Structure formats: structure tokens, C-alpha cells
View (tube, rainbow, N blue to C red):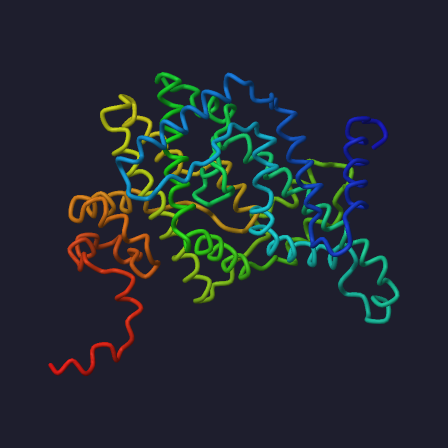
Length: 402
């Protein structure tokens, strides 16, 4: 290990990060995970955002927000538009990732501490080895933190803003010039149109996340509930760790890739959480697509082609999909995006913009998974529902003399 100065320096940095973790800070040293993610993006090139780039993105977000006023009754969610480097995206989204990934990280660290320390020791020996076990759990936390850092670094190289995966990762609307450049590769559309189309999507998401009070908790809560049902395949992890060369970062990363180690429990509660999450992700993406298409109509010549590019990119998944699976044991993909977009479009035609957007007023008004199967039934249903009807007491209808 002393023959490679760069690898030795990286190992020493990570060891120092591990020792610097404050007591009670949780199963993972998130400062270390953040540093690893930032090193990963800087190694691939992550220049600071130039003033000209920043101005272009701020202008695009402000213009997109103005266009959306004609397509939805939800008010603006863009108050301080920003342009971020990939490192800034990592810094600003870490708090949400911590909330999403910690349930899985805790299981991984506990299991890894037992695997590294020999979980089969007699009770007396385990008691004597108490301090050693604590250190081994710290090592497990470091190893999981390394994996999370690598995963976030990989994801940061793909995203174009804060809402790519359909979850509210930040309360600030922001786009990444580097991400937009990567998205634009191979596309023969004007750079201004691509930037403005992506700004429309970012601004539309933020209208939902800022002005539908229950939506953020609903989405993040469904992810957390699903993650709590994930178990770690102890035998597979022990097999991966046994004989592992800790001086080989590639082997370490492969061992902790998570794909074969995380197993969902097939409980009815977890299945329900997954259906609820997939349905709501599809409804969010479908509404955004519908509203953005309407806002861009007649203004952006390439809007239709760009919409198809985004749908294909979102529906087929990719490295970001694998990254999220590694972090929370969940394949995050709106499987029924087209059905949801068609349902929102039909609702707009049948009830108008006000009637369509009024459904976001309460979670019980929202379409269900079954409604995506039979949208015509939902669209033809009672259009005059409001929240007061949901809150009426059973005896409200009594005593009217009828």
C-alpha cells in the first residue's frame, strides 16, 4: 500500500475523517461521505460556475416561471433561482440524502460490525471485545460512508437540477451548467431552448413542492417506510468481506455496491408503500410534463422532441437509478409516466386548469393506481369535490327533515 502515494493519501484522509466523526452522529460519517462525493466530481472536472453561466440560468428560470403562470393556478415556487456546480449540488442536497439513506446505512453498519468482528463469538468474549467492536462499527460506518459518497458523486455527474429524480432534494430551484451540457450532448437543438425547457421542468416541480403542503412529507415518508423494510443479506455480506483486501478501493466499492446485499421484505405494508410511492412519483412527473408541454407550446419549437428525450431518460433509468438503489435499496422510477400525463391532460380538458390543479389540495382527492388503469372513470367522476366534503362529519347530513 506504500507503493502508491495517491492511494495512501486517500486512505489517510478517510481514516482521519473516520476518527473525526463526533460521538452520536449516527451510523455514517456524513462529512466523510460528502468529501468523497466532492473528490469524485472534482476528479472528473467540476469548474466553478462563471458569472455568464449563472446569469443565463437565472434568466431561464425566471422566464420559465413566468410562462408557467399561464399553465397552472399554483403560484410561483422560484424565489431565489441559482446556478450550481456539481460540488454545490452535493453540499445542498446532503441533508435530504441523509434522511433517505440513514435507515439502510444503519443496517449495513450494524451487520458489517458483526461480520468484521466475528458475530459468532461467545458472550464473554464479545464483552471483552467491546471497545474493539465499537471500533469495528466505526470502520463499518466508514466503509458505508465511502459507498454513499461514491454514489452521490456518480449521481452529481448526471443531474441537471434539484428535481431530476422526482423528490424534493432542495427548497431552492437550481440548475447545473455542467449537467445541462451533458444532457445536451448529441442533441441538435439550440442551447437556449434546451436550457429553457429544463428550467420549465425545474420551476414546475418547485411549484408543487412549495405549494402542496402534504406532498413533500408524503413522498419522503413513503421512501423511508419502504427503506425500513429493507434487510441486509448477512451471509452475502460476510462472504463479500471475508478475505477482502482493504487496500484495494475498487474491490471495496464492489463489495459494498448494495445490489445483491439489500433485500426487501415482501410484507403487505411495504408493498403498499411501494405502490403509493410509485403512483405519486408518476403523478408528479405526469403533472409536470403536462404543464410544461402547455407552457412551452408555441414558444419552444423543440419542446416536443425535448419532452420525449426527458421521458425516455426518466423511464429507462441508468446509473442514477442504480445509485438510488444503492443508497436506499429502492428502484426509483415512475413506471406509469405516460398514463399519468394522459390523465392530467384529460382532467384539464374536462375540468379546466382550476379543476385539475384543485386535486392537489388534499391527498384523498388524488388519483390512485387503479385510476391510472381506468382514467376515463376518474375523469368522469364528481368534479366539484373540495376539502370541506372530506372533513364533513357523518351526522352533518342528519336532521335536515328529508
